Length: 105
Image (cartoon, rainbow, N blue to C red; front, side):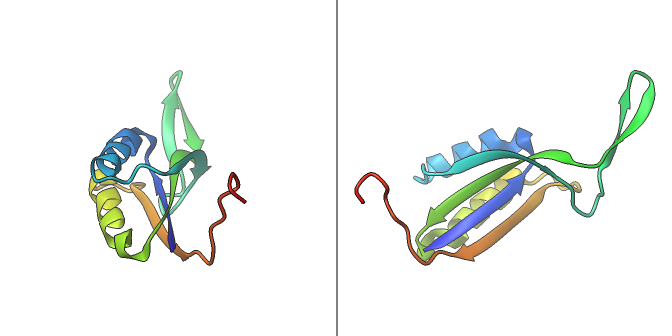
């Protein structure tokens, strides 16, 4: 089993989620997160003043899936989260040793 964590722009969540569901991948956990990468924050205009925002709102999608499906899911996320600009996000892949279903345990 593998765990995929994708940190993407919030405005891309619906597109990514719809594309995953269309391919039959329904199970996922979504969290609102904040962070920064290479861009080190952004400058925004607020009431005529420029303010620096160091931690940018993002969305984290977590999916635990069989090893065979990982490349397809990574491709779906990459294609649907892409804008071509800094801050599109990152995808991380982890080994999962074991899963336990709480309801039937």
